[in-house]
Length: 237
Image (cartoon, rainbow, N blue to C red; front, side):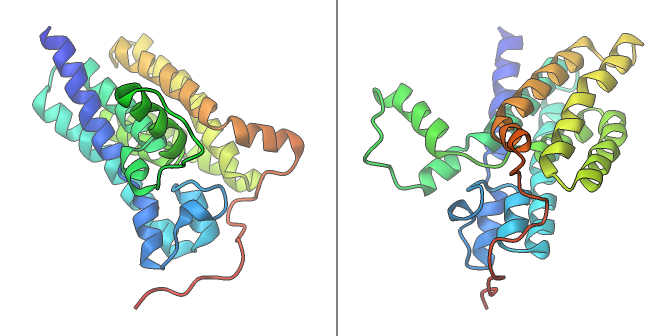
C-alpha cells in the first residue's frame, strides 16, 4: 500500500507541474492566445510560430523547469523508491498534453456532450485541455531522473531538427532513442529496470501525440520549424 501511495503522489506531483501551460502565459505577455493560432498547442514550437524567438526561449526554459522540479520533489520525498520517480515523469508528460489548467481556461463547448461529472470531467480535459506535446518538459524530467540519458539523446534530437527543419522529426528521433539508450544503462546494471519501462512508455506516448505530425510529414505538408504565422505581434507594455 505504501508503494501504491508513493506512485500516486509521484504521479500527482508530476501532473500538477506538467499541466501548467507555460506557453499560454508566455503568449499573453505579447497579448497572444497561442491556442487560437497555428496548431493550437501551447508548446514551444507553436509559441515560436505565433509569437517569436524570445517567447519561445521563455517557454522552453519554463517547460524544462516544470519537468525538473517535480522529479526533484518526489526524489526528496521518496529517495529510494525509483518507481515513484518514474510515475512523476509519466504524470509530467500526461499533464503537459492534457492539462486541467487549460481546460479551466477554455469555455465549455456547448456542442460537445460529456458523461456524468467524473468521467465527463476527464473527457473534457482530453478534448479541451490540449497543451504541448511535452518533449521539452519530459526531457527536463529525464534530466533530473537520470542525467546521462538526455545528455546523450538530446543532441541527436536537435541534430535531426536542424537537418530536416521539422521539430516533430527531432522529437520523434529523441523518443526513439530514449528506450535504446536507457536500455543500455539498465542492462549493464547502471539504472533500475523501472527506468527502462518508463522509457518505453514515454516513447509510445510521444509517438501517439505526434500522430497528426506523422500524417502531415507523410503528406508533405508539415510546417517547418520556425515558420511564422502572419505578422509579428506587438508585446504588451
